[in-house]
Image 1 (cartoon, rainbow, N blue to C red):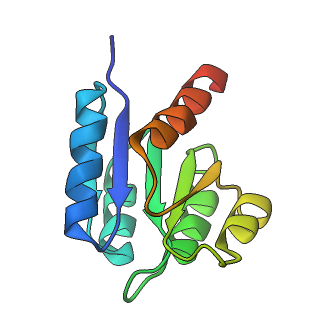
Image 2 (cartoon, rainbow, N blue to C red):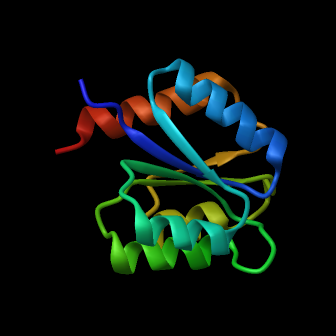
Length: 124
């Protein structure tokens, strides 16, 4: 069985590490990026099955990375993550830019697992 490859993008090293542990325990291969610029470089040099993407990051924010993904990797599933419960990020990223979901921090592991199950059960 081929392991699904994830890119986790968040400027919080603790959250990146926690997500990496969760995903690896569930059998996924995981790479991470600490900012949007690093994520863009990784996306241009490797193939991923999904991206977990924080919205608020220094230099290049999550919506800019999502826009790049839609232009260069249009079928790549992306889940946005945000700590701003009042944010319009969820509506903007889901409707206009094609993110599969938006998780509001802090989210539970079960919420993440539910989103991933939906991705790969409906993937072509």
